[in-house]
Image (cartoon, helix red, strand yellow):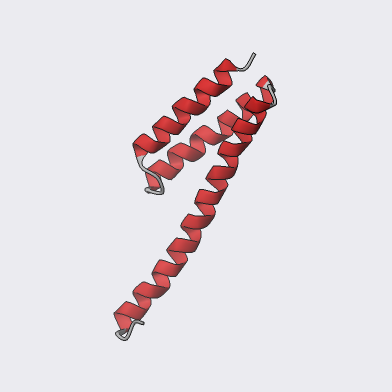
Length: 87
């Protein structure tokens, strides 16, 4: 456990940041699952709308350092590929 004042503050900050990051990653995963679910249901219109919501969220997460920028680019690419394959 932290014993110095600065270490205690850092511990408090880390807990706040962790909570924020966990919530943001969870929301991101939900948006990605929404796209995949609509693709699996062969619903082109809803999957396109879900993709339009997921892309900015992925880019924002990459900009904030939540996920790596290439990870975000890969996810966007794969989701777009799946949506485009829906008839």
